[in-house]
Image (cartoon, rainbow, N blue to C red; front, side, top):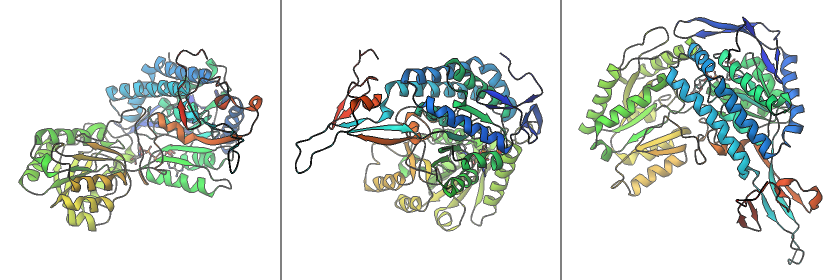
Length: 538
Ligand code: NAP
């Protein structure tokens, strides 16, 4: 089905195309460095306000939808996106330079996330129901009847990143989890992949219509983040923000949200260097496998993954020297891939230049530039632990395939180095599972768990499993709020708040906490977990 046939396209407000009043943009094909695809009109202030108003109006009905209606809508969103899959992948290839296989995988991840949240809605654990029936005879004070559940926050403004044009964009994890929670979404389209965004947004809007939901459940707005995005976050009808992108963008939105008359939460995924620690015992194993795994993880998607390893800690000595030499060999043979935008490519080149200019840092290996424009060579540099601890800026993220190898003398030093680091999405340790069980290794893990959202052993941080147990989060600046995850089913919790009903008569109790349990939810009653009835017809 071809939906982008014309020359000019528009934002979708409550399912309707709205021609913007503030000029147009076109995407840039990063491999050619030239404009590609149709024009997209950019919204003015009144039009952005109309999207927030439509979301606010839709909230009243959408938050009351039954689990089955909301889940069926999310499943339909996945179906509609899958139906448009060929056109979506073709547009994303043009607009991002990412290879087809990667984008097909990301499309599947996107539809799977929507289906995962449909399951979450049907299971209903996110209602967080706790019931404490009245104890009128309790002494010294009687207990009132208490029934707790969660409620959706209200309309959410969502911003996606350029490096995941599907799974962290229009119908990505933030949108899916907000919609599952019962929150309408106004998505600020990413200007680097507008056609991809509109195709996905059109599919999602069709799913809204399929289920007779108010159109304002989903809107997609085009315009600069600094104007349209900022306005959305100041709009009093917007009640929370989901963001994936740069540290600068995320912190700007945090400041805006905090300065409102009524501040709102911002869940921003921003910056992480994802340190990897190779303990001395791991160096005596298969160093070829270590070098292969590292270079693949570093160079995949041109290093444009939020979990790419930007720091590798390797013990000094001949085994460590040998690992670094193997990394250097592989890297020298590696080729750069087209980066997402000319701007991201030039930031990456500047970051590498800054790193290479720091006293005590030297190059370990440099690959070849790729074909076409904006495809810089992957590169690895090295320094010693003392320089790393003292020189400012060595642990700053360079978004792209650039890594710093830090050589350490004793593994006892690692916890102190970790304590000097900022918050991370991931931290990885390569060790010998049989022998590395002593206090020193435990101390390293205790330092890491205070710094990172996910701790891995004998693996590589790129590749994030989407499920119930995943945490894609971590202390600032990995995220703006380390109490949450943006990947996996627990992401729904960001868009909910608890409310308790005290001595509210049964006739007025909402379904999740009603004595009859009409939605057949698992609930905690008087301190005891009561499972849902397997066969109950709801
Ligand atoms: P970006 O430049 O921050 O853009 C993300 C979105 O935010 C865009 O829609 C952008 O609008 C908007 N925006 C940027 N600055 C803004 C501001 N001051 N006010 C309001 N809106 C603003 O990020 P990107 O280029 O898409 O992604 C690359 C970066 O994302 C990298 O630094 C990478 O490390 C990070 N990233 C982090 C994670 C993670 O999970 N931590 C995941 C992926 C990517 P425009 O369309 O107008 O630019």
